[in-house]
Amino acid sequence: MHNTGQRSRFLITVTCFGLAFLYIPMALLVFYSFNYSKIVPVWGGFSTRWYTKLFESEEVWSAVILSFKIATVTACFATLMGTLAGLALVRFGQFKGRTLFTGMITAPLVMPEVITGLSLLLLFITLGDLIGWPERRGFTTITIAHITFSMAYVAIIIQSRLAGMAQDLEEAAQDLGAKPFRVLIDITVPLIAPGMVAGWLLSFTLSLDDLVIASFVTGPGAVTLPILIYSRVRLGLRPDINALATIFIIVVATAAFVAWWIMLRQQKKRELEMQMSSEEG
Amino acid sequence: MINTNQVGNSELVAAGPAIIKRLSRSLQHRWKSIVIFIPYFWLFLFFLTPFFIVFKISLAEPAIASPPFLPMIEWADEGILRIKLVFENFVYLWEDDLYFKTYLNSLKISSISTLLCLLLGYPMAYAIVRARHPYKHILLMFIILPFWIPFLLRVYSLMGLLADRGTINNLLIYLGFIDEPIRLLYAPFAVYVGIVYTYLPFMILPLYANMEKLDASLREAAADLGARPVATFITVTLPLTTPGIIAGSLLVFIPATGEFIIPDLLGGGNVLMIGRLLWDEFTANHDWPVASAVAIILCIVLVLPMMLYQRTQGKQVED
Image 1: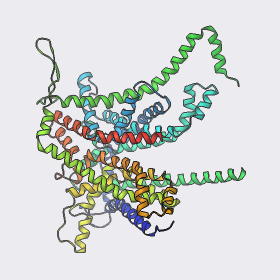
Image 2: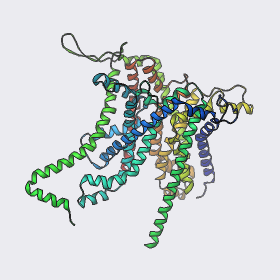
Image 3: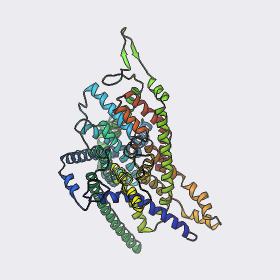
């Protein structure tokens, strides 16, 4: 294209600035996690002592275990129910209360966390007074809260995947005499499986990420990882939190790199196959 | 085509056609009902009901008790059901300047941050759309990657940058621009930086999705017809990307208005935002009815942007 030299330079500058803005704070975080000094931004020589301290802390370990337990249970239930909800929205046509259902699915996505947290806490307290359940807040109440907002995300993923898919295969199976349930298991589920995997991963991270809602609905003794981190960083910079953040960043970066590499390979394979088939045709 | 299923059915149909037909239909019907019922029931119980409880408590009378409000429905002495609704909590919010100022301040901070996100995000999304093949995916990955790093830790990373003895101040002192650290953290500036930093990807991705669908030939046609780049941008590109701008802006504006972590960790005690006020009202003051009223008002403030977002989303799914 013509006349784009100046414009491209502008776009490249802004993009570089934006990316630097996104990544410099994290790079510094990683850098200072290897700082010997107790005062984070003052360099006192290379050291891994904050990692040692982190791994020796029982408090941190129990928070990590609790958070991973909650995230795993949340991801499984949210994927199951979100998939059912997505299916109902796309494939079942009109049913009673559909408008309300759609509203309830999308509302948690945009509802401010403080409101979701407050309302769920008040529900748990009311239920506790009325029927004696939940007796105490903690693992169960946090998990229920996380399932509620995660399933909305899963439903949206499944919905957009199904909406973009023709019903040909399902209809063909039905014409061949498959019962609706068989169609669901043999045709629809394999088709939406990638969406379910994405939904599971998203639910898992959303659950692991949540501070506000968990702070509302938790009880004595149930300290998730974000709650622990928050209680520490409220008072200022902490080198052991730098170390913890570095571990997270390394795990995420590695996973992203692996995913990207797999995707690239699959794409190349697909392109090759397409080339071959077009040559045959 | 051999169809065992139908053969089996047809034998039975001979025995009692109407009954079987109805039975199998009801079974089919019930299967679908169960699929709908499970998520429906869950959301009804854990999303809709809690909301009504908040609404109810916002209309209750505060009390020093456990729970800290008086029951709304009670049997009066003569066996008459008495329902007591108290609007005092809302009146209190209206009369106390603090709440009004806090709502306004939240809206101001979130609108300005949304605008900043748009100004930074729009060119970035545009650059990604126009990037060549391998770079496009790499850039996109760099925009998505922060989503997978815990929000809290990303906010924390800014604390290290902005603190009195943080990287920026150290650098400025080292370069000789300043002698004393300037206050960046625990000030409104840090809150703006925090919101733009954490919500920028939410702005870029809808914009990218929208621009990706745009037909480049429209732009070229405008250029061929003699439109200058600026004119092409204003008359062609900008109107066509309005849905992306709206979706991205709402995705930043709505959560930023109710934000709790950023004003708390980066604003310190100096920046009032409604999410923090609600939290303090509930945990520190232990005033549930007022906290509930604050939540209801926040919902009312955000209901329009939320509905707007749902409508644009619905349209996108249909497309």
